[in-house]
Amino acid sequence: MKQTTFYLLICMSALFMGSCNNTGKKAKDQAAVKSDEPSQTVKAPAFDPAGLPPEPVFELITTEGTMTIRLYSDTPLHRDNFVKLASERFYDNILFHRVIEGFMIQCGDPQSRNAVPGQRLGSGGPGYTVPAEFVPQLVHKKGAIAAARTGDSVNPEKASSGSQFYIVHNETACRQLDGNYTVFGEVIEGLDIIDKIAATETGPADRPVKDIRIISILPVL
Image (cartoon, rainbow, N blue to C red; front, side, top):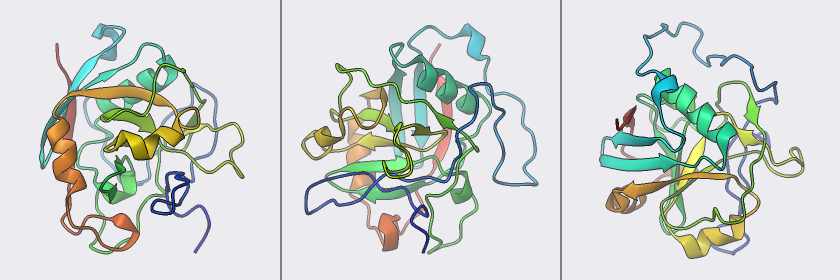
């Protein structure tokens, strides 16, 4: 198994050892999104990003319920990238492919959209990374949204995955990630949905046994 096969969040406790990995390569900020699905049909945009405020609010609708999220203006590269992908419906029907109760829930791998049961996931992305944006006051509290990334040994600049992100379930377990992973938003309503997803039964590589999907991510206007 290649070292970069899975996204693994760095956690120094004995209970949660790992690192956050992807196979995306760094590109210019204006790089076009490359599909991981060669026959993917181009869809009409879900919304116009130009009409959103500096700290846009979205409904992140999942098969387990709806979370309302807000993106931070202090992390504009991550905000704009997330908005772009959401407008392109990139996240529609994607799985929460890695769930660790008492730690975090993770999604954003486009290869998960049509994954068969038992398929190992975590290496997919849009084909680029996003430069790190560490802001001291943006920490891993419960409901914080942060970008996954490859480990330090292959990614000393701590650049973020182009699409994979995680949502904090337990801030005590995740606070050691502060300053190492970019926090770019938070859940402002629906923290109980995080609890519900985190409590699901998981199998190999922490993948939920029952598929849990993002249905859509749409702005609250």
